[in-house]
Image (cartoon, rainbow, N blue to C red; front, side, top):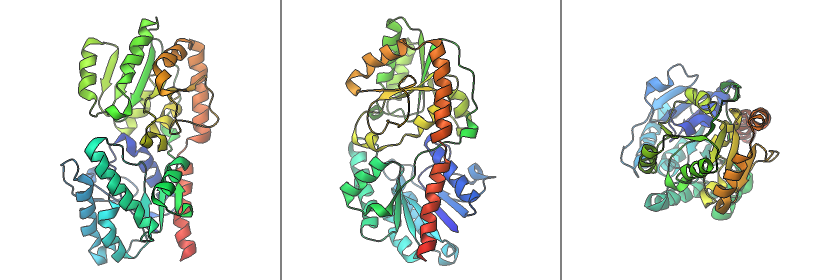
Length: 370
């Protein structure tokens, strides 16, 4: 099957880890894949798929729309696009691409790895685009869609009125081979968060958590990896706090080694609509790296079968006080045992294989329906 994937993800982004694993998995299953995005061609050199660079505006608020227009122009060349059997399209691109996709007359799958996460005006505009994308499924203009969790699927069904049979869950997964088991790092207690450093993700509470931890008598360090609108405030904090380490976004291949230097991975995202629906990739990456996990309790962070000795969530209002108490109670042996248990859980439940198998089921449904 010849698959075209039109995506807003760029392979240098940390959040593209599942995208990369899913792309490799489809190729391993015998499909011919072409990835369309804004990456330079060199970033996909040696990859087992073809790549097409799409132009886009660098102006915030216009990037997805301009990228979708570039994709639509590519599809307008009928001889060039005629070999596509199935088109996978990220939701921010779908509304502007829909006329070109309709002319293509091939099955289309909406890819929703996360509802809009921005706050303010940009968030409101994104929710409008998100709804328009999902309405393409509701009104039969496309054939299927994917989400990251059952809660995400339920939300879409209630919010837009789509048929559940057309919505497929592709859980976030990681390449476990990239996360080699490492010895437990020496003290002090090392905490880490990686991802967007945006205020609406709760990251500004993390320095306060570590400050309280130190006041209680536990030596600790905090590493925050990424970029975002909270970064200026965090940089100002770091000037007075030598235990606060700010690291720019790191490439995929460096992330496992960076995470392995720490003891505890943090999930500070609050219990707002978008984070309750999420299946954060960092959760699986922390576990694959052998980290204990501390976070805020809501559906987007919960996992079945975990043990609160190494995976602990607290209500948002109690996160700081109870989080400090939990961290204070962890012994060096507890860190070592938790490291082993977290990795064992990842081996059993966090592989990207489940995501690939779910996508294969979607693709094969088009063959059965043909």
